[in-house]
Length: 157
Image (cartoon, rainbow, N blue to C red; front, side, top):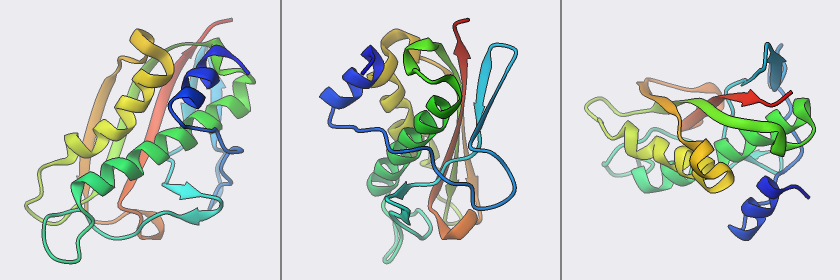
């Protein structure tokens, strides 16, 4: 187990196998020193860990729960990246995180939701986990997921 996975393990995070695509794409691809992950959903053991729309009304996914789900998405993104680089210790830095949040109209807390993913990158990579980011509200996501995360990672040769 490399240093990155050791830090994750100390935080109670075990990387799953790379997620299986739900359509025609690959979980991650490496090109010109960068790894691009496909958008990852909050899937645990093959099952979506939550569905719905994020908001603050009755029946909505709470922003706090959505942040937990974003963390799961980030774990899956790292698993996808590992499937192409072999060892997460080859990651030089997290370049960018993009988070999509299925949101109720008027909900503007997307940045706090995507913090769940960003914080995991800091846990895994320390200073090298600091990254550019977008947090975007959308009407719906695949399979009814409340959040989806993709990352771009720089890889050491």
